[in-house]
Length: 121
Image (cartoon, rainbow, N blue to C red; front, side, top):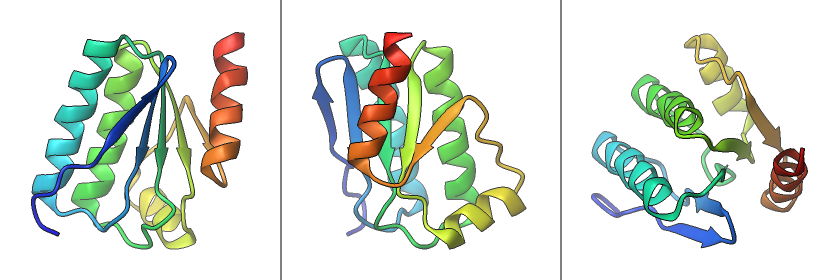
C-alpha cells in the first residue's frame, strides 16, 4: 500500500476524503499537498475527512492532520473530521494537536449534514 494516493472526491462545494488505510509519512504529505491543490482548483468551501478505518496514528501523521485542518481553514474552508477512533482521539490530545474550529461527527453521513448546516450559516 506504499505510495498510494488518497482519493479526494468533489460533491457540490465540498471535498470528501475517506482515508482507508494507515498512512505512512510520504502518503500523508502527498495527501496534504493533493488536498490543498484540489481546494484551490475547485474553490471548495467544505472538507470532510473520514478517519473511520484508522485505529492508530503516530505523532507525525497527527501533526500532518492538524496542519491540513489549519491550512484548509486558511484557504477559507470549513472542515469536519468523522469517524475518529478512541485511540486516535487519545493520541491527538496527548500530542497537543488541538482541533479548534473543527466540527466532528461519528460517521460520514452525519459529517456531511453538519458541514452543510455550518455552510448555510
